[in-house]
Image (cartoon, rainbow, N blue to C red):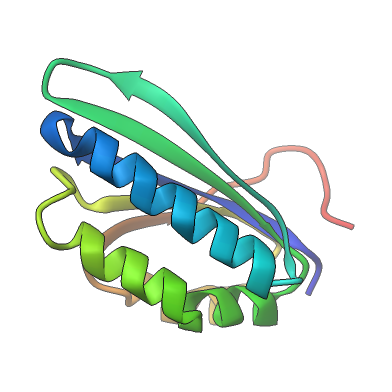
Length: 127
């Protein structure tokens, strides 16, 4: 399986933005320090309204195993645990961009508590 990436969108209550951004900054630094298979890990603000801010994490992985390592990383588990304590005003929204077959996708489609999809490749390739 080749490298791949995902986009994860976190919808944050406006009154939680400052605390959320600090938690995310700390998590980002820990991921950088502990995950050699995370090739790109960036966060951007994609929408700001009176009620919420929507942030996009772009995560590029060297391999499927590196994604598994990321999800088991204690700092990522802690980040998700904190978010589930009143930060998010919508489910986590994740889109995978990969060349996985249906069997490889299957376990991810069963994950509860998030909106997950696999982008359909019209043209292009993964090396």
